[in-house]
Image 1 (tube, rainbow, N blue to C red):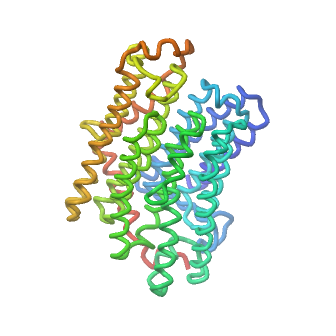
Image 2 (image 1 turned 30 degrees about the horizontal axis):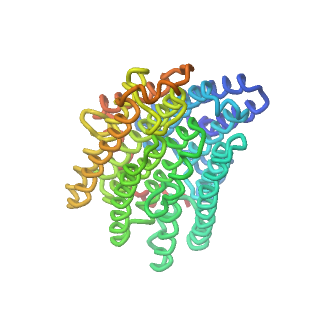
Image 3 (image 1 turned 90 degrees about the vertical axis):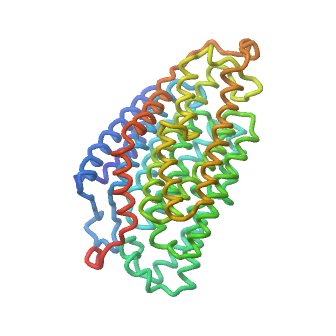
Length: 484
């Protein structure tokens, strides 16, 4: 399997290149087939990794400390499967949605974005991680702008500028690391990081925290997200919700034990995690549009993942991993429900909605499953993931953080009830006249709801996988494992 690991990134890129040369329908069909093939490959590779065989490949026959290292371990393997499934669901949904159909290169851009995210997950060096960030940025920028949409152009401004600045800071940090250690390979950096002078190490750690905080949309560098996502085409927002910020969270997971493990950093991360949860959920409560509410909740939910990372123990990191998997699935599903709402009623503004539970019971049922999971009510996947994090917080003596997490969960439920009452339960006579006759399938969103139910049903084995992933993250390489 080591010889085919690179195909995990190459396959979506090839599909993207071929789809550009085809017409709309053929390009969309090829995009679906390519994403399905990528999901199959990711599943086969994950099966080998989860059986106890980590996959390492150094491209081009170079020594590992100077070459491009690709690595698949339990964390990257599981995430590769999840994001491939998400892109497949979104591509299926995009075939039914008007905004996306007007973008001829839409399927190609979806696949390029998938390739960038997968590259970020499997790389073992910082510079290739930078390349992955830029690949995702280019594809997401074009998807965000859409076919000359004014709202997309306005939304893209803060997103692009913020992420370009973050990229420049990342390059600065990479240059400082290479000048000091002589390698950007994470194994080499892990072994030699204690030799870096304290002030320089602290400066690099701050740079990386800012860069990955921007990518993850953590407090206080999150403002680009609530403006960008609602301005994107509806299906594109669903894709972004499942992929973009998760790359930043993954980068923090991968580098936190190396660069951000001092006592001072632990306290800063804990404050950032709690502030991200609170600011995000309060922002959601103040909105009156489904997409705006869900966008602020991305910020809030990132705070839960950062909470597990701030604890930096096995239980906390395992909880963060499980929460990451849960959130990718649930948040994508909720945005796909937003697609369905817009298709039915022509709007996601709660002031213009109502009665959708009677008009489309299937949509209401799927939303209920996903909303309850996002809020963390038992026995959903959200409850399992939040319980793991709250238990880890109490176990680490961080009772205040645990209480914040519980309170934010209750406020999340309140905001989900706001959508339910405004869009699904209120009098249908407010929206009957504006409801479109077009009926698109609820299948893609329902598949995400089914996946969320599966996460809850198999939470025991999945928590075991999350624990294995956390162990691999927290256990630094021994000198024998570090390339010479």
